[in-house]
Length: 75
Image (cartoon, rainbow, N blue to C red; front, side, top):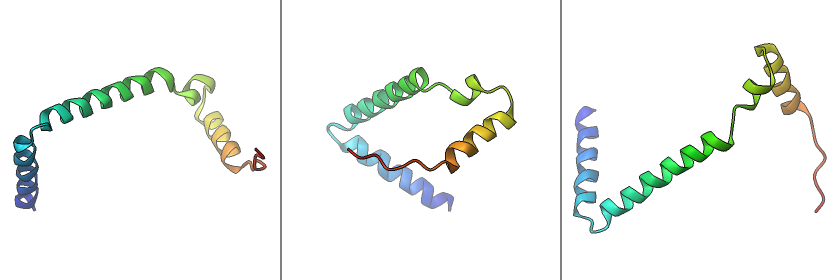
């Protein structure tokens, strides 16, 4: 099993090394992931943690929102 994982990792490593734009693409991907993570931390705060003090209140809120049916919107 370890041999298969090692061969797969070496295959991808060698493949990206031989690419002309490989390092640039990986740099762009890593920067994009970092920006998305930072934006998610900034804009998507923990609503349940900030608005409810106990686990029971959080559970009640989640259950009531999951089980409530809303009529379809007509646009």
